[in-house]
Image 1 (tube, helix red, strand yellow):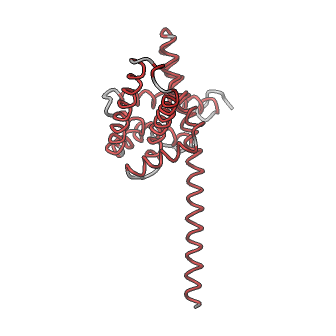
Image 2: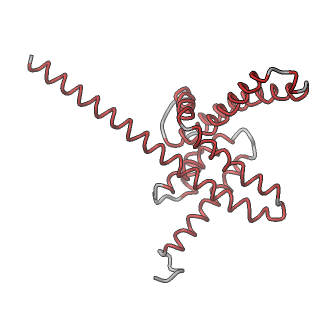
Image 3: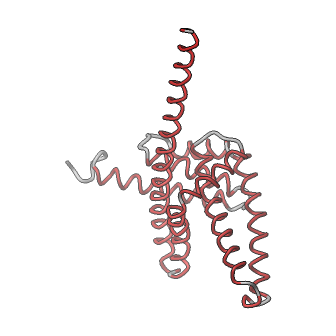
Length: 226
């Protein structure tokens, strides 16, 4: 097979890489107003997970479809996250300003754990919105529960999110190469991670529903027989 033929593995991989780069760029542009970050990130994961699952979708159209449909919900959650983030930032600022040694070490450790947990939950809530239909309350509860059982995975996600920007700042002369490639690679790995864990969650929920239906049918048959 010709290396540069349209359906060759090389060209397929290259096409996917370019799509992830473009999705990351679109997300970055849509994040500029700040208040739209929640909707922009949700749409990014919506398309990213579709590509991971091998769904043939026009990513540009799909991105703005998700952006539009999830805008209100994602924006409200993002504003809540900003308020919580401002509160935690102020707490850490007070600790730094007054000297960390003046505060109880246990309290600082507890604050650190709470901060990390809420950051990870804040990251996971947008992929959940992108994948499942749920209310704001359900999304927040789902993110807290998902984080509880997936802390190591989400720490990896956090590192991958920070990496492109951190590497670009460290090597600014290579910004135009590091950020697009790093963002595309990070988005692929993160999307794969969420798609995989969500698939397990879907299968588990489906199994519970089937078991419930089976039990209901058995109870119905018993009532009929009696």
